[in-house]
Length: 177
Image 1 (tube, rainbow, N blue to C red):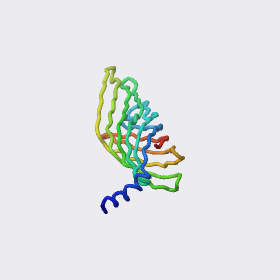
Image 2 (cartoon, one colour):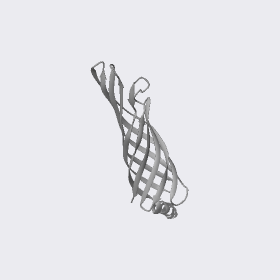
Image 3 (cartoon, rainbow, N blue to C red):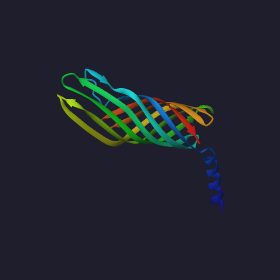
Image 4 (cartoon, rainbow, N blue to C red):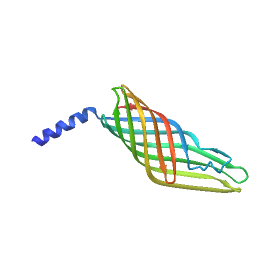
């Protein structure tokens, strides 16, 4: 009986604070899977987006997962090669949160993501297409402003893709329930 009372006393504060949330984010992505050092024209930035959901267990810890699309990169070496590359991912993060005051907090996140990348174009007039996928690490940090059931984030994230990576600098809106 004592164990049940102790367990209940430990769970009540967690359940009183615990809350789920969903969000959507937009921002600038920069991908280094296109080798711009050898291209005469190269655009390795684009607009990316993500949708995500999470569960905040207490004021200092949450888990979230979602989908991110990193947009498209283009490259061209006139008379030799041109093409596009794109990537997307499914991710899961553990999020550590440090409240500054009731309205603002800073956070860091780390986790894993399952990514898929595609590149296509032509080399000397011959078409090529290749794709790759994998599981790698991801991490990021940001600041969050809380406004009742809504929150806004400014965040930076990086996603490792084998020998390449994608940086995401964006703004996200969150609805808590």
